[in-house]
Image (cartoon, rainbow, N blue to C red; front, side):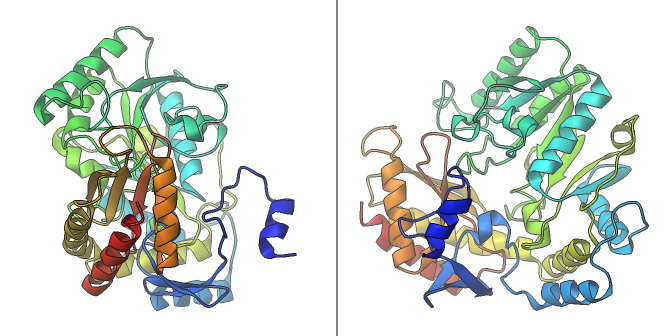
Length: 425
């Protein structure tokens, strides 16, 4: 039996695999990975935006090995130096005053915790979320996901209402100017709040990840926050994909919307561990300490993952990878716009830093073209490039998110491969 046959025999059908002939990745270095057949690929997806700095980064692998040689696990019932040290650093860069940090093992669990905090603090289970959103695969996270393809049930512990604004180029306000778009979305929010009971929080990704790297005009969530603050409603910024400088212009995605201050709660995961399983929540002491029951984490804050996070964050800051994301990402998006300009199936090339989406549609229409996205994904792999796909409109967006240490030469190479892959359309 092949590994694929064995996978199908024991793994659920709903655990998706990329490619008509799925590949087994065996090792990586820098921005490249190799499969079991010895093929080398330029990695423009980083394990779903998780290998943030580089594959096999020596500083991280050494920190993991050193800590594993001392102690792998203890739980939060004991003092944990690496956990405290990483929490101190994250609190300092979070932008949230008097911040407290709680570590989890994933972004899903981080968003779950944020929802628990918000609903307990506000004593209501009403939540606002954005259309086309994705926040994880747990029961509560699925119930605030505004993307049908990732929401397998309508049952929910929460009452969720969805707000306009996260998708700039589709929907009833798409033809408006940025200023009028923001005003229309704020008016929609005001109207919605007039028809519901007390709301605990609005949760939003500054740039939607699974939704296809869509984003509102800068300042939308600042305008939303003014409305929310009048009602005492909390703002949760889901930074699982946008955090740590990936957008280039900002360290956090919310900083493009900082006119009314930082979010009340910030969630993070993915890139901070560079592949190790780390998630977490940052909130002010007033919000974080409002739980009136005991809670611990068995695996959140594991000494090994915290050591990895510390080494990874230090490397990112010391090597100005946010600046690299801005510079190389700016070049990459311009190259991609150039190669896409001659492809009628490309509806839009959008993004910020090293978080870039290419939306495909049937030429001359706004109708999604998921089969075209699948074609390009395959063609890119055949030419030595790994990318992702997503989008709320039938998975027709190519998702490009390389490690933040991407070089100019690698950006040029990847853009050229994508140009060839798009030519199959």
